[in-house]
Length: 305
Image (cartoon, rainbow, N blue to C red):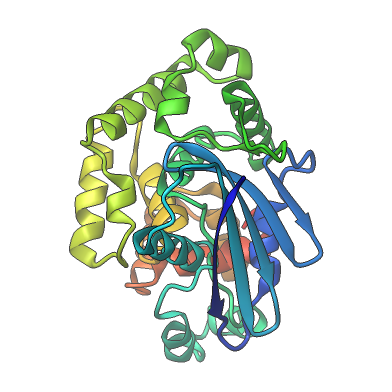
């Protein structure tokens, strides 16, 4: 008999459910996530076992239930972990309202903030999932990354009893052979990077889940950045994207992102914007540079965002 954890959380005014729904509806095949109206069903790895999350978005609150396999931990600590995951997944990081108020009259960004008021950055269910997604998406289109991610999940074949596939954790991903990952479409360099990440997580050198237990402070983000940059195959874009989608950290600089630069060029009415120019422009918005990048993504397309 399955065990179930439940929790709920109040949603802020002007919460945009479409941002959360769009993130989990990216893959039209819906093997590991399914979106129906305002309900998200997602397979994930919880304490090393398959689990099924159901997340219902209502006008003023969100409800989550997590179906676990027999023997799973349902202690108060597990309940707190579910609550923390829900906060991250809904993008409920502090500072969004302050950011909009502070920059509402900005001569360039102000109009974009008005048209996208309330925009938040929804996150992956775990920092590990976000990091794997960032590595998967290196230097390829979003559409190609979605297909590659799907094949990775299918190769891991971590399945909840409901039939929903689950994104693998570090142990399940490490169990895949290089040949399986190559068959899924991963390059040799990405396979090596994933292997190094899994090894670091399993050895305790990259305690992603531990870092995610509390909202990050600037020193925490710097420590995570240093730890990730020490892994061959991970550069600044991968780090800052993983910090955003895995931890809800809103101050990473995503100036290396092509879509961010394209959106910025359009906003500034310029033919193009270089990485150095984007970095300089985004620096004026600390400590919300990644949130500005999310607004730039959203100005192009919900799929880009």
